[in-house]
Image (cartoon, rainbow, N blue to C red; front, side, top):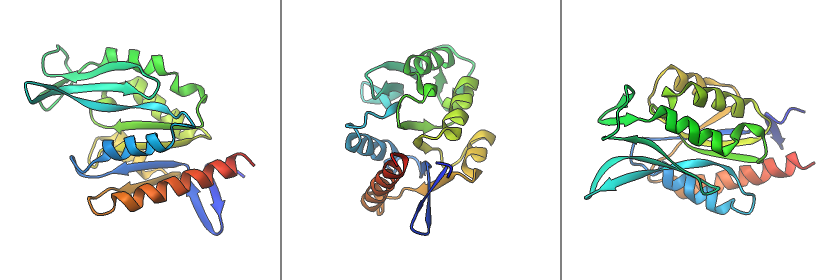
Length: 190
């Protein structure tokens, strides 16, 4: 049986779980709570954090679960890649990705926050995401509610479960996701 979909009773568990929702709904906080619950498994991946200066959001920093840091975007850098007022540091982002060795399948679970417009400027990131989606390992990521062709393509995949995060379903979704992770891990270890 392919690990793409694991049977649980009569229900298929998809190993690629993408969390989407409107901006500000708490996708990053949701991912951080999940990663905290999984720290014993040592998931690979990263999350984004706002860079605030004098109380204003000025950009986004990248933080890996293994302690690496990088810059994704900032209002004061030079770059032809831009989302809103933020200029995206593609070269720095790709150096950060290389430092994580995400494509080597070392970790049983990969968690990424987020598959978004800024990240998708990088051809290396798009290739990496396709490789993780095609792997046998569990993949959990946040993904923009709206986006470019790549984001739409990822959401349409048969092996992806797209989950809409809202203020009133965060707690139950966290429990459901942890149950799916446990079921996937048990089937994978058989």
